[in-house]
Image (cartoon, rainbow, N blue to C red; front, side, top):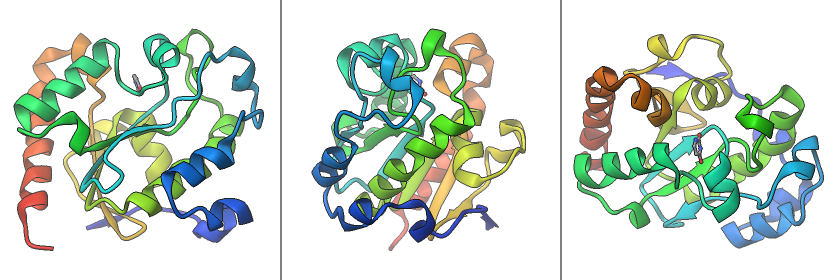
Length: 204
Ligand code: URA
């Protein structure tokens, strides 16, 4: 298995975040966040949704317009496709998995998040993952995969391979928004998802 290039968690987590033991604690620590310049443009902080004891966690890039308005990740068109992957492809319920993003506030015009915004927000995702302790993380798209893995390798080369992310198995795959533009590549995601399903079904 390939290994993610990660910094020690203690270097990233503030003392109060290290003390957070539930997702509600993490959300309280975020508060009315003003830690980066995305604060000014957001309607809502999009924290994450789903089962706090999920075996499977999806991590996307950041909220778009629909997510910003509803305060829930993946509720727009790309979200509908992700929901179909979960319910029709994996035969699971959306409420049984956990869904979050690297960035919790919508970037203006949906531009890519910038390095200072990522550094401000990443500790919260890290703590969410530590608290949920999923068996498998699926990183959706270039941005989530490269951020979590600490690599600049294109998603086309990352996807389809298992990574060890701080002791948790991580599978990078293509982003649902990309699939909306390139439906022929859905078969690649299905290959990745089948590997995820096999892992979820394997004993411990
Ligand atoms: N794209 C993402 O990466 N995250 C969302 O929450 C919605 C769209």
